[in-house]
Amino acid sequence: MTPVVMLHGIGADGRLWRPQRAPFAACGYEAIPLDFPGYGARPPVDALDFETMAADVEAAIGARSLRRPVLLGHSMGGMVAQTLLRRRPDAYAAAILCATSPAFGNPSGEFQREFVAARLKPLEEGRTLADIAPETLAALTGPGGTPFRDLAIEALGATPQATFRAAVRALVTFDERANLGAIGVPVLCLAGEADTNAPAPMMQRMAGKIPGAAYVCLPNTGHLPNIEAPDAFDAAVLDFLDRHLKGPR
Image 1: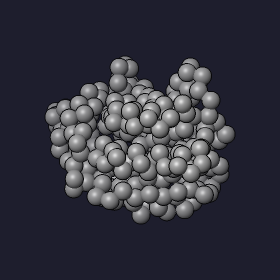
Image 2: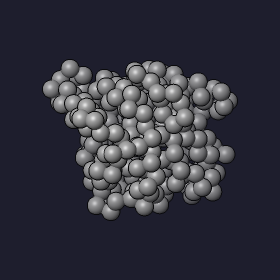
Image 3: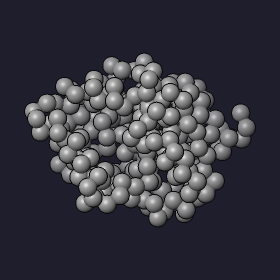
Image 4: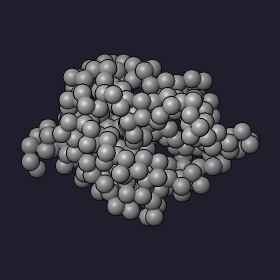
């Protein structure tokens, strides 16, 4: 089976790809969800950066002897996928960049400072990630919510606070805009119509800067399309992969 390395976002870990495992396997794709440093069963970390996360993924791919896997990155994971595509441009068969962006701008800018402060404010007030998980999920999802609400709340609540703080601070340093035009593998930019974190128009512009990239926008879907509309998400990703790796379905 073709390996699909799945890279999670800031408020989850590899378990959030659970809905994709069986449908992908049925179509000949092996779902391989990874946990970034500090996530899942890995020890909490106090600092993160994109080069370190990319190197960690490369080590995991090497340890599994995967040859030219597909990258599937959501949000922060989509940023790591872009970093991987720059570091080793010929090492991957294709990439799906989901609910992500090519840059966060100037890390010392006002927007970035406000972003970090807003994301960390509940923790500074003494609340835990488990405390804020339901309201966070409600803010991230579109009008239809998600059939995997409990899974998402469980994943966010299990994220160590130190790791979450480190990831928030890492986000505002991200900028891979200069490499978009150099990406040479098939790319799908997949957006949610109701996503306010990675707005669909921005992702469409991003797709336009990647040679030959496809763009799909899922209706009534927010920032977590793989658990909000798993059937539509899976169909979009699998159709894209079949078209580029197997030929027409």
